[in-house]
Amino acid sequence: MATSPTEYAKKGINALIERMQEYLDLRYAQFSRVNPRIEGVWPDLAWQSLQQLRQTYENTKAWGPNRFCVGAILVSDDLVKIRDLFSVNHQSSIMAEVIERDDPNAKGKDASEVNDMRSLYTSLEPSVSGVVSLIQFCMWWDMEDAVDLTRFDFKMESLGRLRRGQLPEGAAAEYHRRMHRREEEPHPTVEEIVKHEVDQVRRIVERFTERRANEPGFKMIIARRKSSAADQLDRLIGIIAREQVLLTNLEAGKEVDEGLKAQFAKALQVSVDALDAKMERDYLQRMVTDHKRQLRSTMTDQAGGIPYNFKEAQAEVIRDKYKVLMKQLTGEDSRESQEKLSLQSPNSDV
Image (cartoon, rainbow, N blue to C red; front, side, top):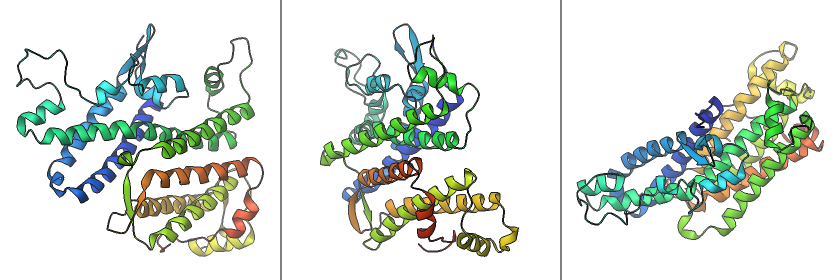
């Protein structure tokens, strides 16, 4: 039985494509520094390749008598099926849909036949087929990392809701299935679900970090940051981590200290007495969003500067977020964060 994409799967597919777009943009910047001639062809080829990848994510693959949406599997906890999708030889692998190979049975066929991206662009300009192949290989190298980071984001969102006591209807039954519990066993408690999700986050961080240690140089994404951006990057990571802790505490009903209340009031141009919890949460959320934008801008700055491994920088970010999460869960949370938090207005230089 085929499974069409659920709303959750559609959200996951959109997030996966966004991650892949980011990786391809960075590789384009990296490769165009070596060969500026690709600037005339890469953007269209990359866009078309991503549309083809979206179709792959929206399609289904078979395991036994059942078929499942590829995108739904990639944002699920079914690590066995995820591994199958990225296998080079499993019957459910998506490698053939991503990397187009010459058909070994094509002898005797019309050599001018157009039946995939490579043959299409080869018929227009033979040299362009190499760029098509390069984009496809880049996507294959990046897909598993995009899946891990997307699942990481989704897990952190889920943990935020769970810690606020928000368990959607039917979620306990879904986690009962995910956690491979027998039918006669009771549904998991919120505490057990939180433990399950934290374990999933840990595994994601470990896998992403391990791939960085084993990644050959030719697969790395080389980004560039200005020499003055190194301190800025570290500072932004620290600020975001502390703001996330404070935001989580506010959402859990905890109050900030008087010093932070005064800073909130000054930034919002209201009196301390006029502040309420919603105003504080909304303001903090705007700050987190703005600082994330600044962080991404700093990490992807391509205007000369010092080269660095972009995915290693991403690994550092998720490791730091995991450390903050564990501190929250073990009670080492608000006091230290509130004392160290240096609030910046959304329009200020950081």
